[in-house]
Image 1: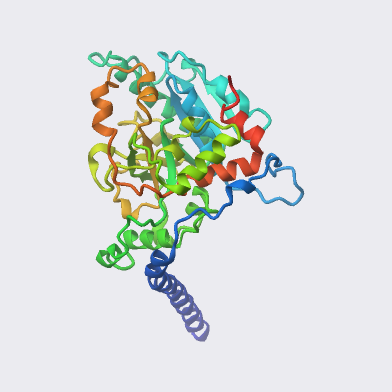
Image 2: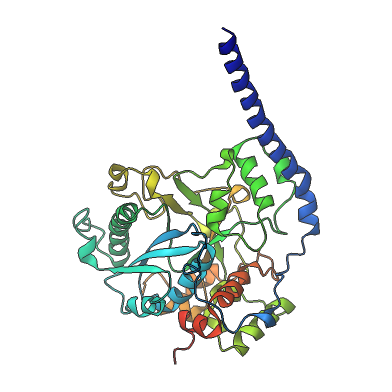
Length: 402
């Protein structure tokens, strides 16, 4: 009897300790949130002129080096080679991406292998598929959907399903399902966030916990995988995690001193500034507005999905598996979101797509709701150059191609 009571007492004490830890974290976040918001200068703390000219490629060969947790991606492309260079470099740095499976649309006139081959000799594992690898699924395209766009969507669904199975068999965990004009972004608290929105949230709710975690995000040394691994129990990501999408318009701002500083550094070192959409364009559509950003995208922990679930025909590219909820999420509670870059008219119209008219472009080109001089997106580029050195970084970005 005494031992039973002692055991119950120990269990109770352990439970109280866990609760105390959770409450302490929540209180600390709440106490610090307004001060962090007020004190942060939101300036990248790098000296652009001190980026290393040379750097070692990777660290996997170092004795005693820790194995870095990484992510994978399933990417279908259509005449996207110019975008792919930046997309791969950015996600290699930010996710960090170490495994990517790419398939080209039948109507694509460009070969993605021309981009992928520059990554030979690095620790990015890549593979390219053809129709034979995935188009056996789901039969022919349904009658009435024979137009080019529906054909592309049908193929994309078959590809996502087969790619998810492949990644699961390769023992990958988190896999992102986005396009080449979509960049996964850590949703740090910013000046255009309302710091008092947390007062409207129910304490200890998932929404509240995620907002607190946004406040606690480290400014410049965090990857998406770090965010996943440090999520509190209450804010743990679902197996299919919806990332709200944010349209980045075609407006550029050349009046910001830090923007000009970054541009001068980039161009003076032989990089092509015009090809770096994630740095060149910073103005956004309204947050938490369905139009024009529309549906979100997902990243999926394939280890937590069954093969039966993966094998079902997806509803859409925004909701590829049954575990995926409706692809909408409030921006203030999102730990991770997706920037959708419209780009310049020249880039937008380069893809042969009947939907890409001048009228469609101008409907979305002139939004200016973002912070004109907010430069947090440039940080990936500095890290990337620091890791690979200027010459190798230019090669990986395709900036030394005449």
